[in-house]
Length: 219
Image 1: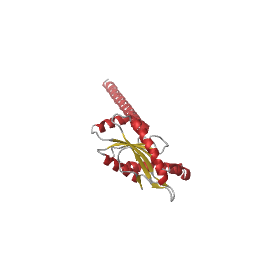
Image 2: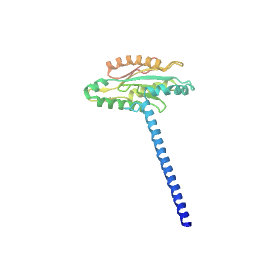
Image 3: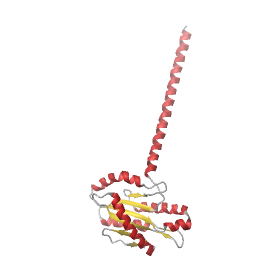
């Protein structure tokens, strides 16, 4: 009889251990699935908010996050610059060198714009497949804004071949205190149109603005 009781007890103990192992394994599997789902959700959210080709923020990111950034900048009372940028001669790159080269130019120009700006500045590629960028930033005074604009125009260019040079044109305006961002973007886009006309005539980077600045055309 004692031997039987010991055998039953041992079997029960093994059964308990086995059950615990099953529960532990199940917990690990579920935890891993939850972790993977969380990572996938983060990646999905990131992809929804960023341009696939350049990694820049997209229009949705700007619409979602700008109000918080504006509130933070507004505490300092500093002006907010809205800059709409377009790549000059981009169609010629696509027509003469192919779309792969055009994509490479977009990635290069976006990287040079990023390098010319500060970490807190916003750079957006609003349309997939387009050659337009939006820049939104704040600075204590107009001189700093002028310096940043000049640095962007100086840096964001490249030579594709002996005859084709890619530069940028920009329209710049200041966001009004209670103005909707899209209105300022539209105004900057109108200024960009005139800058593009000037760039076609000179083959240089060009900028138009509607606030006081010494900046005109960049060689």
